[in-house]
Image 1 (tube, rainbow, N blue to C red):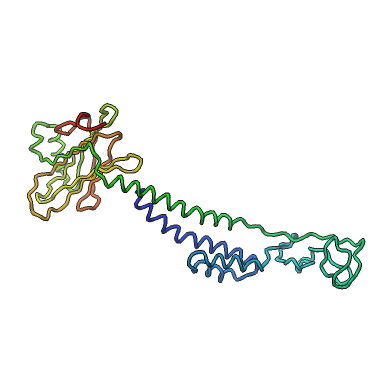
Image 2: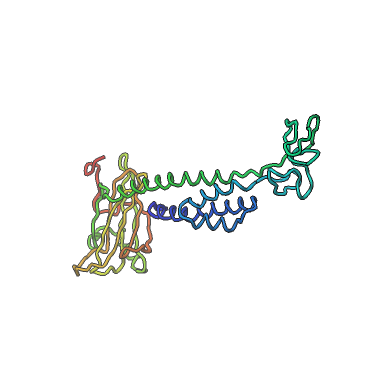
Amino acid sequence: MNLSILVSVIPLSLLFAIPILIGVYVYKDAVQRGMNGALWALVVILTPGFIGLIIYLLVRNGYSRLQCPNCGTKVTEEYTLCPKCGTTLKAYCPSCRFPVERDWTVCPKCAQSLSGYQTSYTPPVENKDNSLGKILLIVIITPVLLFTTLILFSVNYNRSSVRVGYTNTAYLNESHYAERPEVLEWIEQCKKDPSKIYALYYEAPDGDQTLTTYLIYRPFNDQYTGVQTKTVEKLFGRKKVTVDFNQNLSHFRYENQLVCITVLSKRSVKLNVRVDGKPANFEITQVDYNPALFIMHESAAAA
């Protein structure tokens, strides 16, 4: 995917995804604590920034996530028995049934001696949830991801905005290939279907570099249609040459149905064809001969 599209898609996706993820977590957590899950989810999603989440985290501390170890019923720390199944959850005074601790010797409510008294009980368990940690990790990673993506896009944009050297472009017509029958034969075949744009593609090693040639032909090209070409270097050294056929507003007559582009680079070059700035339907044919009328030599360009 093109980085310019990626940079626009990722922030928009995260802009909607993160609040929804937080809202889902808050809803589930609030329901387990006996709170109004739908209301708190809306508060968190609609509140700007993470203010809603911060408020919820402060408020939720007053609501327990404890549950009965036997039946799973929601209980609080004050419960000595499960209200549903009767499981003993905490030690209590045999006289007034006030919750007590194991090392207490006297009940603080009725002054009953607790010496020698033992109560068999199973303490409530907490329904642990690691979702909050995962969400917070996403919140922390998101700015780093966006920053890294912007850096990559910036590098790509800066490199793409400069014309790549070692490129020769010639604007030609059929008469220039009078002595190249193989090219003329290809042109005649292309004329049978003028709805497309055609290109001959040739690639060969040239020392430690690659020589790439494209001969682009647009059948019955309007004489007032100009042609613009640009070779740019993408991220990681990938190169692309763009040929754009566009209406010439100055009414200057052109004779350039053929465009020959030769590039000497470390890697082969991809072709992109447009008409008036929009992607065009084009067909590439790879050949074993160089359709260029002249060949770029290494002496003509720096290594």
